[in-house]
Length: 83
Image 1 (cartoon, rainbow, N blue to C red):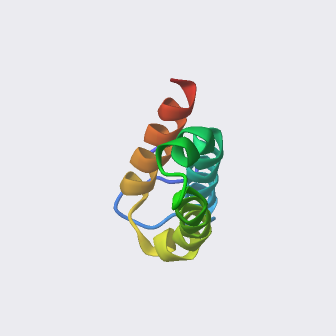
Image 2 (tube, rainbow, N blue to C red; image 1 turned 120 degrees about the vertical axis):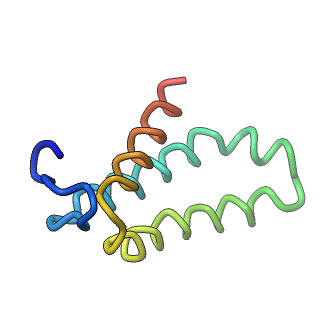
């Protein structure tokens, strides 16, 4: 591991990666909301609110996940934001 997580099989002890993963997912949804609303005008707002809730719900759920999974999610979300 690197920085504060030395064991990639253990959960993040400081909860930094679960928060970063949820935050990057939320930013990704907010940046893509125009496309989501345009693709499904009748259900777009409902889907957007669902994904907003999921981005917040994933934080406590993912606190027990291995750090390797959270590194992957955070990196994948970050690279998707750059695209």
